[in-house]
Image 1: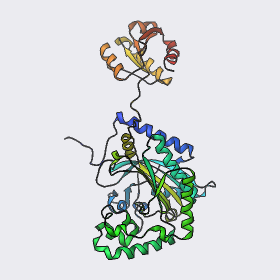
Image 2 (image 1 turned 90 degrees about the vertical axis):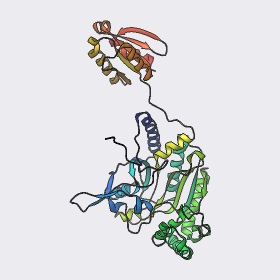
Image 3 (image 1 turned 180 degrees about the vertical axis):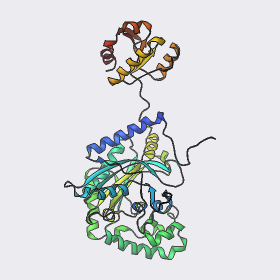
Image 4 (image 1 turned 60 degrees about the vertical axis):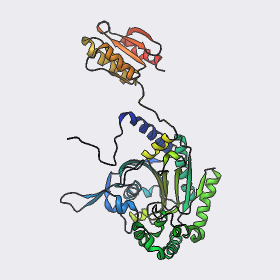
Length: 424
């Protein structure tokens, strides 16, 4: 029987894993600079962590992998996103009592959504995200956006812009919901099946529809900005002024509502304008949420903001811009055992090299001299450490500098200092 990977999944093979590591290292470095700490939450949670009350999002209604164990009534869901689990942990572990709020966290790991696989959209995908929890301020919102924008720029993704909008506070959003219901009700029969459901649950989500977006009644829908109260207007104005001050390019998109129902005030996406990205142009998205911390039992007044990006999509964006994050690094040394009697001695030399921080390897199966030299070439080794019967008996090694095509036989005690000179 031939075994195959499930549809919508992928293996990250060794030749690609170094690109992933390079991406992950860059993201971690920026979080270190911005004073964000890593959090690691479980791969699955109780289902009600993600499925909350009257949620209209496709993720909750269509895409979650939910299961119950045999002889158990406990419903568990493989995490489809990182925010909910992070906020659950923030509340459960009483991080809100930290005297230096906000608590700034980042996460990285696999998520699962049952949706139609396509380029940049998998059923098992890796997501990186940040959450800034405990306080509400336009300065915190802009800090989150600047962190995201700076990360992408540092990676070399230049063909990007920020789309930003506001959903206002609860009062503003309630007034807007009424206006949308009044606007869409005469067109209810013309809405797609999903939007008919959204009409009752959350009419704002109709604006995000990919099926109905070209219809005339979508183009004439009311704008959120006309229903903002003074507090919400001032909050969003400060966000835009800060972006202007920092010279961060952005566009206000009145139709931007984001795909999850818990967002309030600032929402944003960073999109690629590179044609190679095709329909999957959104590389990063997020926004502020006022009700999520209280939902999990935290303080009523506490708010948060966060964003997330699919790491597979970031790698596609890098490829579209011709950026190579690197490949498998070359070896510092390849130990060549030229006599069976010297194999244990060669293995000891190999271990010593590694103990001193040198990336090294050797053939363990007694291949021929020619076969081992081919391995040296394939590994792009900087040096070859030749060990035959004479080297073994005299406690020596022969060091060949591949680049300079020079070799010298030295005492094994001088090997590390010699390597230090060759490998600066």
